Length: 379
Ligand SMILES: Cc1cc2nc3c(=O)[nH]c(=O)nc-3n(C[C@H](O)[C@H](O)[C@H](O)COP(=O)(O)O)c2cc1C
Image (cartoon, rainbow, N blue to C red; front, side, top):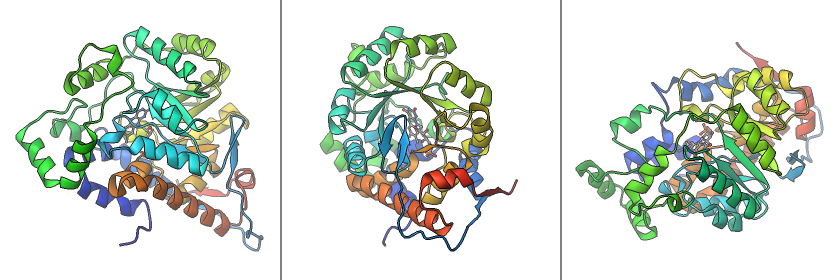
């Protein structure tokens, strides 16, 4: 069946992936009300159309942190990315280059930051988790600098690992355990299993050098053990002083924190609740973006993620105050369902929907959309 929407890709992804992998991707914290709200909050916003404007020529490009991008969205960092599809990180990087959008590699990604930069020399950003052992974070920053990353994204919304019920029930951790059920899942999802076995179990290529362990399971355990709650504003200030290029803070949700990050000299922030993966009671970014915009002023770059599943969502987020969007699961459902070709498909669907939505409500570019802010909030 032809793929019409990002939602059409979720069920094929579910069929293709072993359930413990799909649940890792699809699941969230608690009873997942936060995850659901991230998506449904967009339904509570309507778009006010204006008719009889000439919309034949549309410009979907935007400038963020001094660089022009062809579309107002990029791809979010995803830990253990190639578990969903071997070669996913490379495919996402290549698709991002082709579309001229940024792509972000996670510290917990499965491609080394040096290699990822080669896949997307001008588009790659690196996302840093500041590890419990500070020397590791120091070295990651040094490596990102040496690899000439233009943008470092420091994620601050994982002070502690989350309880994700689906992962707990599946006995899933980044350290995969071989149990009878695990074996059954492999056997009953042969396409994924074969592709993964042929490519080799994905490795934490950024982190594995910092442990003497070599087997996949202890390396993965080591990666999890590096989650640390010690990173604070003083440490962020030191990172800001040290990193001379663009610094983005990912995972803020309050006006106070956003203003503080701006005043500290960060170049942008990502308003995000980590896709509902950390705590179900956090606000949805789309519900707080307008108040954060009012607090930080019109010029400070605000990036938004969590719950973006369509081009209309992107229009709403921009109209509500965001400057740029990151797509997480939307991209990962696509590569999980379609394989590496899915990277391009996700970008094509979202950009086509975005362009049509813009036209339908009578705007030809992002500047005029943001200036008019044509949204009605139902609650
Ligand atoms: C499977 C998975 C792994 C993720 N890993 C990371 C990560 O390593 N670093 C990070 O900053 N965010 C990570 N995130 C959060 C995403 O970057 C992004 O904030 C989130 O997916 C946005 O929500 P959405 O999936 O609803 O679009 C992950 C999200 C998912 C779904």
